[in-house]
Picture 1 (cartoon, rainbow, N blue to C red):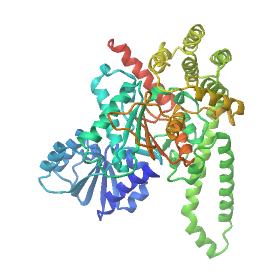
Picture 2 (tube, rainbow, N blue to C red):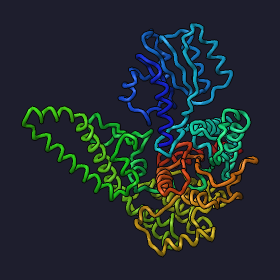
Picture 3 (tube, helix red, strand yellow):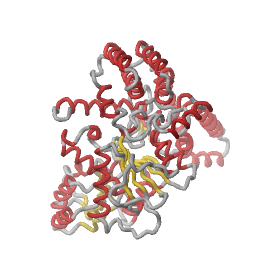
Picture 4 (cartoon, rainbow, N blue to C red):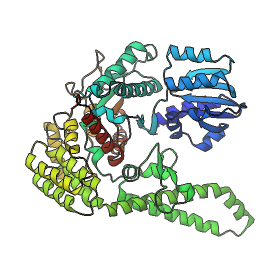
Length: 569
């Protein structure tokens, strides 16, 4: 609950101390921040009768002096300019300005100078500059996320922009938690090192007073790692509920767009999937696909019982009871319909794309050795007419990442086969992935075959067998959390920044992945936190990934820029 609670508390404080009718004005970033923790009906309860975006409110000239304007914006120059223009000819009776991060003195002076009519009642910093999608998982929805794959010379301003966005987000996380962390980073990653150093500079030098909470507990750990250390996880098909919905349909700010799916009712065209607002989803978000079917059947049976009892209205008391329970009944009906629609659609996609067959080979590539059998399995799937282009590409990528040093001849055969079967994919995309995230570029032991402890653990797991062949993969993040819990995270792989070292095992750890997180990793964090190891892990990333719509898209965009810039190649 930690992240969502912090953001909810900030929004409560914004809205409840300002009495009367209000308009809430957000920007394209803060609309996501608010929407994942606050529903429309909750905003109405706080007397918010209008929610507008700051750029569209600028276009309107209609006076609304009866309304109090509550602005919640990121402190970026664009928003300060919007405020400057809006304060020059104010439309609202009062202006209450809240910013999601640290305002600098110049920005404060601009706001003060613009308020000639003295309509601004307050200016405050509320540190909620992140999207709290799950209790222990946040994202920054960063634009130009692909920049993490490119060297600084490719586009220095754009790279600086993404670094600034990440540092701002991390600053807000720790200001919301009221802690200052010790910072480590992935040793082979230039961008992870740069972000770690800039965050250290902000927290220990530029704004040291703001981060000095004078607390005696052990400092939390911030570990900044690079998506390229584990390129396997975002390439895999998923078989647990939340991760599967994102992989096959797509989740954006805890909402799923179902407009393009068959015949769905108007109110079901966009549905909310939030563990905060949906008890069934909270109980089943990490369950396997097979178990979800059984859980949904139980939910449908319960709903049918309720529907039957509602049909049996015979007395005035029955009628009164039905009217009292009707809102709850409608909510239950909507929930049943939502989950049945999602599972039905995913079952259809699984069948059409032959994902169970494909996923078995993916899991073997990610988890087990046996290069000869893997080559045969991938070749057979490349020849299968039912396999889509994107699934062929992912299979070749997973094979290349695993066996890049072992079988150059067979790897070249697969490249040629992919080019002939799926010509829509630009030649060289798999090679570009290896250049970005091959074995020589990665920190950590991705396949558990470098470190003796990991080799022993994998052998033990192989002897024990796996519960489910489709969910046997564990992301690199799982190993990292285990190493932190046991005090074995190696300094040589994950150096500290400056002279701020960990004195003892931390109680809070924020792991930030530059390049983005996946819901499989979010599940790993939830499972780890449930073990009560004495450490609370929080996961964050610059974006939220699935294979086709984000990870591969970022890879293609980075490759395009690399090709157009001779200095990068």
